[in-house]
Length: 419
Image (cartoon, rainbow, N blue to C red; front, side, top):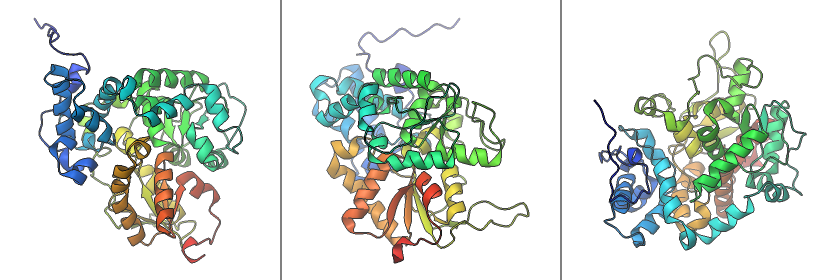
């Protein structure tokens, strides 16, 4: 007869034991980790950080050990390690638990406290976008709905307008509030879940997002069937008509009825989570093929476009094909060597650790300029800010643009590199 193991009385209870015990210390995660690539320091790798987590949990390190505070902050939280882990370690969930503990009280960075305060109520989020021309509609009782985002509506209001131009059936009530991803990733996962549930109640049915990080968080809390990132939704609706209020994808796409927390280790090594079948660096694509099997001509063949993946969208939800397919329909798609690796934005990371964030970004900017592209498309507002500011600092002619803006607004014949 099987029995449930007794909890370790010496454990501090910071981490879920099943999550922490899954790591087998194989080291496959090291080459995938951006901070390990910067430092070559084992402590600044997923394996090294899990070793610190275990030391914290077991009491062999004091809670105020400087390494615990430093490494919980230095980690980007990009979850690239999850895609190569043979044991199915849910590192993103462990990092949230770590920051919930480590970033209590004065341990929480000041900028994080200010950011989460600004979006902790629907009124404050509404005020952020009050004088910005983001999309606005009356609430719909069924959906589908467009999630406006908290800071995205203020910083990049054109994104939601572009999404509505592409998908006029989306409702976009301005009173919807924050999804809680910012809280969940920055030391307050309980409040992050509360906000996600509140948003799900206010936006019943399918929620379409223009933010990869928000999509992953909402899918974890509300369920994968409730959430679609916009490139996912666009490719699905162009291939088959979704059933009302379901946003059902086409038959040849993988089923998405589980949250990332429910995935098995087999899921984590499937083609949607690994490099199998992904475009090789430098490859160009003209998008989908026609009924006769020949490639369809892109709508603006003179435009060269690269993509920066959203880490949580790619590594957490396995969505990476769809934005590439859409960009291939617009122009000549160029795969960057590091398209699938973090740009250094990482939510609040670029504000909490700006110098480290720029170190991660610099090599990517070199790649973008060397690729000779006109645009680098993004699917996340944090990546948008990071790349836009980085390219502007360099005086680059390459423009960062959200995929929705590019799909909805790019005028025919416009070629920014020669303007």
